[in-house]
Length: 222
Ligand SMILES: *Cc1c(COP(=O)(O)O)cnc(C)c1O
Image (tube, protein in one colour):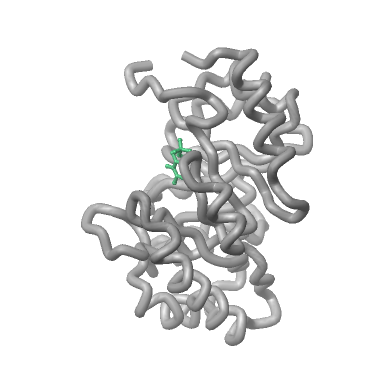
């Protein structure tokens, strides 16, 4: 359960602590729409959902004026169609079949969809993301998709190991930037969560995804 005064205080505190140019994405999994709306009123501009079903359920109830929606969790190819008209960015692009589907569904609705390539920095089993050594080739393979615009990289590093892995993420970002095609606009490194967003920003992240620090401990039963 979210304590509203604490939530409002956290939003203020986090926003004040972030340097200009760093985007705060609120990770809103399990948080009810009415609470998210209060957070939006308090100044949150970017909402990140993990599950397409949850986004679709809450979407009609959410305030949208000036708000951007992100998919930040592993995305099944068959779910792309349901979210493509709602999202401003898909942060979990990690395989050819998903790229193909995002491109196809974006084309259908006349949209170019901003995406981040998700990197599985620690090569952890069961986690989404491309292996670090495959990331550049994967990026280059996306050239054929005219309705995808790559904006950078995203990662959930192994717990507590952000510092150790940040350089690998940055190197991939820099390699992609060097090879980028004109239609892409590579300017986002999305890493950092409640426990380490300040450290992430000090290392160079310019997009942090914060959930429990804003909304309190998640209740997965709701
Ligand atoms: C839940 C989640 C976050 C936020 O996690 P907190 O530790 O609650 O801040 C960030 N990124 C992703 C991909 C998530 O699933």
